[in-house]
Length: 197
Image 1: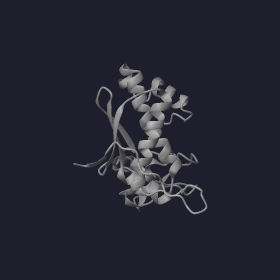
Image 2: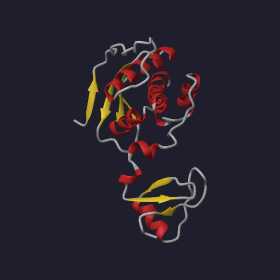
Image 3: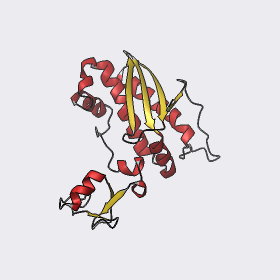
Image 4: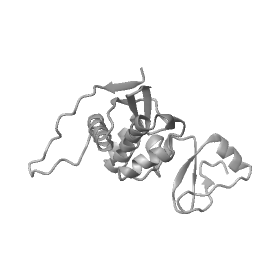
């Protein structure tokens, strides 16, 4: 099995420092509890009742989170282990929260609008995200940083602003034949950095 499934129970209360303020640091083991509480809050705020489990997928490389419909009213939310480990390392609770709400919104969308499954990021899902007060974005800006660090990719490219981008073998081949690509941040041309030029 490639996932760790956590029981559908409320997590224990987080530790509180001696000054009385809640702890702002979180660990890898805290993430399923955070996801559980936040998903329940989203479902409650949307007036939806559904059964769900939270899983950590060890083999996920191309997505941060995924909501799977097991049967009507039963769901499994999976998160990429690599993504969670990076979020914990960087203590990036904002991106983690956005991803959890994104996946919880899929549950609300599926329960409220059962025929909307064909358009998973369409108007119904966007409407749920907006009603929750979140931006309906499908990808975070730096998804490659979370999933596969550029240093581990086979090819990379850089531009004038200093951003390093992972490059697939196909894109590298096209770049070697003269195709140009632009940086998503500064919109300047990117160049291969692995001595392939």
